Image 1 (spheres, rainbow, N blue to C red):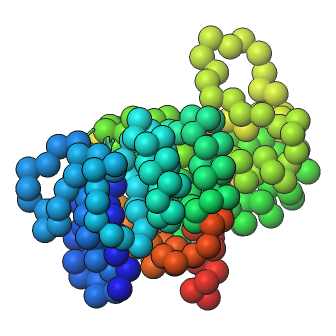
Image 2: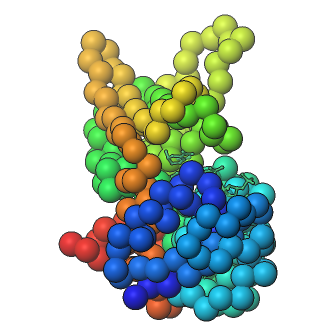
Length: 254
Ligand SMILES: NC(=O)C1=CN([C@@H]2O[C@H](COP(=O)(O)OP(=O)(O)OC[C@H]3O[C@@H](n4cnc5c(N)ncnc54)[C@H](OP(=O)(O)O)[C@@H]3O)[C@@H](O)[C@H]2O)C=CC1
Ligand SMILES: O=C(O)C1=N[C@H](C(=O)O)C[C@H](O)C1
């Protein structure tokens, strides 16, 4: 049985995970952390991670960038493995997470779905072929109107994996408003759309002369992320210090 602390338990993701965990006999949420609590959860809820004095095997984090430093400090000090799913983190926070992984098991992934984590490799293969042939790369992501960060963590992770194979002369272009110049061939364009209840769409476009190839992932419900994070919790519990990602979880299941 994997004992989980749900960090951000009253948020949208926290509540979907709470429901799924209730149906999974191998996982138990033993405590939650969220600034406000109306007592509706079946587990105790603490207003900050420092106050959470419940024994657990792993933390699942879907909260807010503002909460990340305290969480990483706590997990490092108490050697508690942590799954960081929160997006919109600063460069300093990303560095802090890398450093923490030298002392405790950290799994970080901007997207916990099987689809997106399989797409990384496919995109790298595609980028090698198409960009070599002079195709332009553009990413478009769409999310609900409650989302705080833009572009999405997933769009950045997809762009990072493409840039990794294309080289350091490629750069990200987030905004073209006010420009009066042609597109630079080394741009990786990243555009964000926000509206309604869109769960999450990511489209990667390779546009060449007279032909276009598109890779698209659509999340139809938050369950795809919740399922992935529960699998990740089972995977990370008891793991030695290190930096893991969702691809490690998927590989371990194959
Ligand atoms: N990696 C992935 O697969 C996915 C990542 N995400 C990311 O996860 C994060 C959360 O998403 P979502 O659930 O939709 O957002 P919500 O805003 O619905 O939930 C976040 C919850 O965290 C709470 N919170 C704020 N500060 C703290 C704190 N210090 N300690 C504990 N909890 C805190 C919030 O409380 P309050 O509302 O009072 O501020 C809220 O209840 C976002 O960054 C999102 O981008 C989302 C889906 C998938
Ligand atoms: O905020 C969300 O909802 C999501 N955030 C993640 C991101 O920023 O990439 C993952 C997913 O697309 C949903």
